[in-house]
Length: 218
Ligand code: DX5
Ligand code: ZN
Image 1 (cartoon, protein in one colour):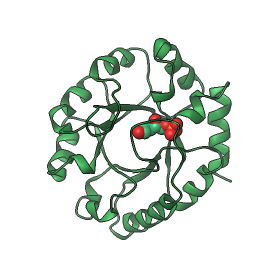
Image 2: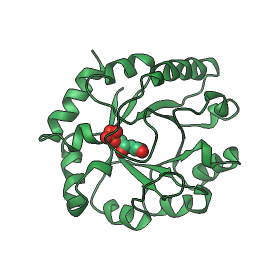
Image 3: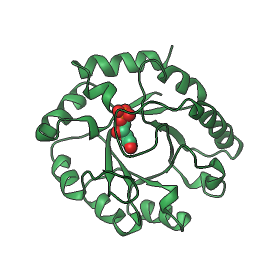
């Protein structure tokens, strides 16, 4: 089943609570929360304090994408503040297996993200441990970038790998997703679609989510 996860990076931060309510009422499936530290990526966003304050206002599963170095130092704090899914970037995790177990022991679903240039082979020995794999379809750091077409092939390859090891991991894609590429990515095997600008820059987020879902199943 196709799931849409609006990224709050494109929301109006001066009206964050209202924007979250808007996409929740619009029928999205997850709330994608981009956490950036100015070290792994050249941008800084928000941390656990903001997530905790949003937690009281929303019933949506919080899909927290950590684009930070040394994520293991903060995983428990993010889960305590309300994260349901924790995604770490494989490039930041020298002890990936340990980090995945830490996420699960903290009580969240475990997801690992790969930058566009990072090989799928980095997941070979942990694929069966994962609830989700995030294929970055832009270089992380900013919303509103263009989708990288080479990622279509990567998602297809990952889909094959997941089947071959009978992992239950689902594939998420993030970056530049819109109505013109979501169908191709769904056919390639993606099931969870992060959409920042395609949802929040649309005058009617409910219509944007509906159109994305329709385009994904065409
Ligand atoms: C990029 C972030 C994405 C991004 C998506 O570093 O991880 O979640 O905000 O925004 P769009 O859909 O505008 O590319
Ligand atoms: Zn993201």
